[in-house]
Amino acid sequence: MSSEYAKQLGAKLRAIRTQQGLSLHGVEEKSQGRWKAVVVGSYERGDRAVTVQRLAELADFYGVPVQELLPGTTPGGAAEPPPKLVLDLERLAHVPQEKAGPLQRYAATIQSQRGDYNGKVLSIRQDDLRTLAVIYDQSPSVLTEQLISWGVLDADARRAVQHEEI
Image 1 (tube, one colour):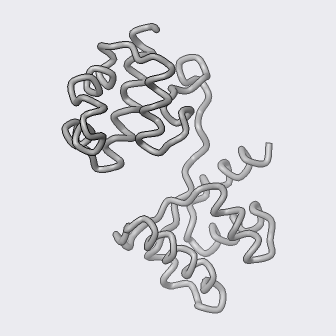
Image 2 (spheres, helix red, strand yellow):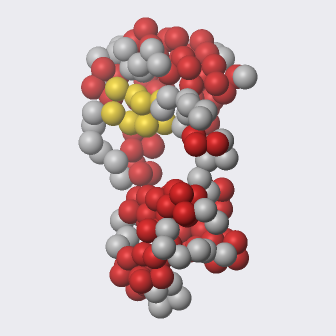
């Protein structure tokens, strides 16, 4: 494993761990000693090679698919990822209820599930957009245009939808 690849893999491991609110010692405690803090830290720094088996076990421990831990497959990250879909919750609050009611309820459900109540923005996934499109009885691209016109989504969201439809 190249040292650059090991560092990218380590960065992914660290990102997943910190997203879950775990310190290195927290990983050791939660795993009841199965994952030593010093070992996980060395994986994250790219100082120690991780076997496929151990990576699969670590992915299982974190509750994520193995592919979430792997660095991008494009050389040097050459492919630009599609923009994130970020709802502007402050603007959504000003859209008339008869138009935005389903979106407001959906966003409130996501916030509740994530425990994310910052009230300003909310990232949604492509799957969420497709589900909302079904609720609104529109295609994802038509719904995206509607949300952009309401000021709830940034115009860059078009690229995310186009990327998905390719």
